[in-house]
Image 1 (tube, one colour):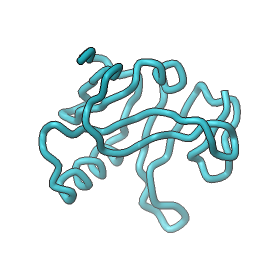
Image 2: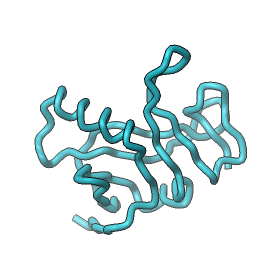
Image 3: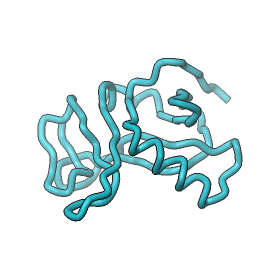
Amino acid sequence: MNVETKTIAPVTLTEGAKKEIVKLMSQQELNDSFGLRLGVEGGGCSGMNYILGFDQIKEGDTEYEIDNIKVFMNKAHGLYLVGMEVDFQNGLNARGFVFKNPNAASTCGCGTSFSV
């Protein structure tokens, strides 16, 4: 399998996001072969959706480590995600992961779709 491991991730995770990711991984009882998949896919009201979930590494991925959290990203997705910050909000008005992407020309109201 053609997999690359790098030390400096193109994205950052806030403390809130890291805590929630570790909590979710523990609740789902995932083994060490799983990590957090970050990526993009076509669709959504603005043209592209973010991918965020637990997965195993795949052909063409680059593996990063952010504070002991394995992060898998398809090499082609880095162009759209470099510089992005993933946060987790747990407030009265919003609960969930929030993507702050400097590459997004526009985003939709739900915050999970963007255009470049």
